[in-house]
Image 1 (spheres, rainbow, N blue to C red):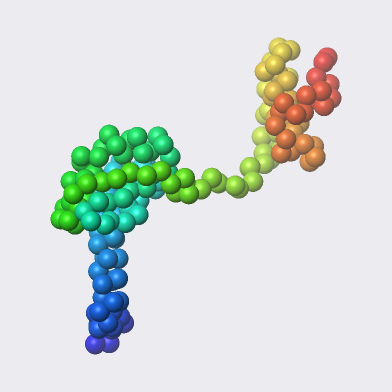
Image 2 (image 1 turned 30 degrees about the horizontal axis):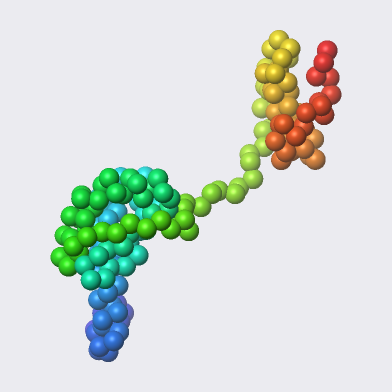
Amino acid sequence: MNDPSRRVGVLLNAVPAIKAISMQLETAAALQRALHGALPPQMAASVGVLHCENGVAVVAAASGAAAARLRMLAPRLTRALRLADPQVREMRIVVDVSRQPRVRTERPCRLDETGMAAWRQLANSLPEGPLRQACRALAGGQERSGLQHQPLENQEGEHDGDHE
């Protein structure tokens, strides 16, 4: 019995209270796998099984829209949950906004000089108007460090040579 996972398993099964918790965790993991296996892949990250009590599996969705989609899929999902745990009779859906996928907060990529030159060239080739101004703002926005993270609408009137 040199395998550490076997030793942990023996220890978990030795204490009745821990064994009961271990069995609940195994059931919860099986329900989670069954739910994710029955969901479209794009939904799996924002949906999860919270718990299962008295035959009711409580499933959390990250938004009202995800919850509505789960309700449409409820018969199929309930069957999948029942296969993982025969005690499941029904599924209840709740909205849990803390499950929303994390928004990436990385800094935007900066253009190198070749990219900046391409934006300037495009701006110079366009007729005067909003599109030309936007291209100039994109090219000029990175050159001015103080304006690099401001939306274009906040930079109005701050462009040199916009009016030729």
